[in-house]
Length: 349
Ligand SMILES: [Zn+2]
Picture 1 (cartoon, rainbow, N blue to C red):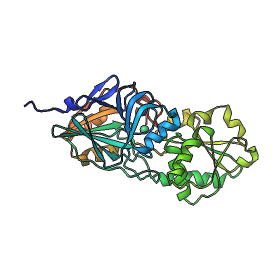
Picture 2: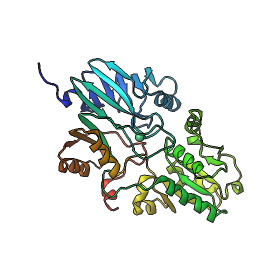
Picture 3: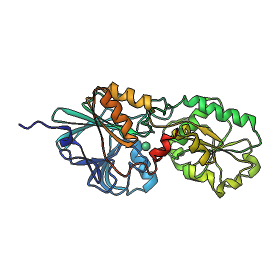
Picture 4: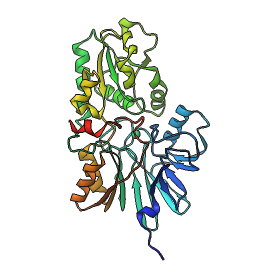
């Protein structure tokens, strides 16, 4: 009998990570017959697949975004649940990234590979905590895979925002935040800090935020910003997608003060370049310490590194006696979050 090797189980293809023995792809970037999807961000969850296996939350988010016929068929799977696909066993575990986000453990021929998608080990009131899954091969993201990236406590960052609101009650506080995950986490953190005035929302984040509230995430009173009188927004907090905070849309706000919640706000040049007055370093991705601690905790002897700053993390793994290689997957980082900054810019930090 021929012994299975990890790349017989999962292999990068132009469609995404392919499990040949299981007959499926993980987070495929092109339409495939059977897709296993880690979370709802649009660079991971795309429309047009035959069958989709994902958590109920991820399926719901895809439905909200793409409409009812986003896939030929769907199957919901819970954290801790295992199913057999072809010759492989597939089990979902929480990734702590956004509501419903999952790591996918694939087991075949006695080898377990965990594809973690995007993840963070920092606390987040809007989703289930990250779970460490013991495995032979761990596939990690590397969005913040440089030692310079160490995210501060998100609650302290939110306190900066609230201090500014108290200091400038005549100014509208316009906070750029990604519509899926970051916006809702920010609202939950603002509420946890004791702020209970209404929070205003850009139209693009209303549906998904409503969905979080329906799933039991406490977000307090939210109002659409559309149609609200300019004077009413003085001293109020409004959340909007990052692209909206730098265009004509901001003219409806009295003396707007622009904030932006992103892990990239650690890079001062990035904040300046975007005209961000109040950078808030809040990320839904693990920072350098989170990445390295997680890699060590999985006990995996082999690490595959993808989307982000692969080189430094591969180097760290090898220095720590682990086999490691970059996984050349393309097509990730379009919507998601903080992903997508050129390495040269990150290096300035
Ligand atoms: Zn993501």
